[in-house]
Length: 449
Image (cartoon, rainbow, N blue to C red; front, side):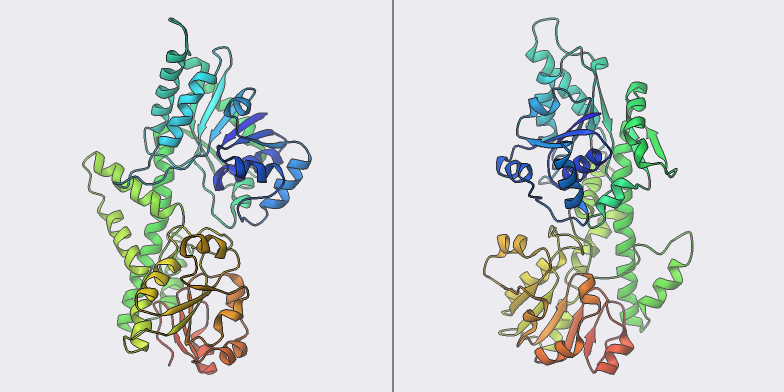
């Protein structure tokens, strides 16, 4: 099948590459010529485990192409995926200018005799499919002679939200838990069943529903997971005040099959491109229909505070004087196995440490270049994990990269001025840290002294 993917960001590049991997002919289009030139030359522009191998293989086989021309990309495509940014607007709602801008162009490019499926792959508010459909029809009418233009039967607008987790996105796409498709078109259903068939051979469901339900499903899923994380962070706060151990509470809760084990790990808050934006957008959508979404408002409030959960503890250790203190920081990405730093708790911690007069020496396996682009030389970046520790007063851990889980503790001791670790991701066993003689602070557990 011939497919166009509009947008070569995280979702677009994974989507295009994975569809090419199942034998489809995919053209990805982006207005950023420099990015398109890199991709065309075989240089992948995001870090995602397993993606580069598929990307290079499908380029070599001639199934994956890149262009800046929307017209060339959609000319022969039966299915057009819109994988475009939906950044938060001033009031928190998702900004649809990129999606509707492309829809406006599509109205001028689709021929009445061709049947095309336009798919919203981006996370979009309820009602976006209708707006895209109306924009295409209006644009086509304006570009055609009187009596011309498209009819609704010439194309279908479908909501097909992505459920990709950064760090395991290729697996999520190739072996999805479910595929959600919002459409009332039987013709579109048949085509998309064929398109997705290779991905659900083990029997995972393709769930058809109306467009609005599909749009809301994505927001509801991300908001629920954000709520689950935030609830556990609240429990961690109680544990610290009551002398309980959040690890034990988590295990006791997670063994209940109604609750499940996942997303119950406490820490210094969620970040990334999805949860913060999607929770905020769903709250704004609720506001627009005069509904006060109290739970999600609380989730956002708690999460903002949780990002700085370690800061008072760090300040207390230094008797509220961080001026001139050297802080080693491991982890800049919002989660492991990605270079994404959007809403990363580490950035909030760095900002406050700098305000207090501390010096920060940071290391991250993948995200340092992205942080350099924002912070410049306001902090020091170490090329190797242990270099960040040299002459540092304490170590702060903000991202749970695998290589941080089993470090060389003797080397840490030899490099740090003090045997002190503030761990925002609960990586280490309390008894072990006690035996090693560390002053060790984590989340929702007792402080080892």
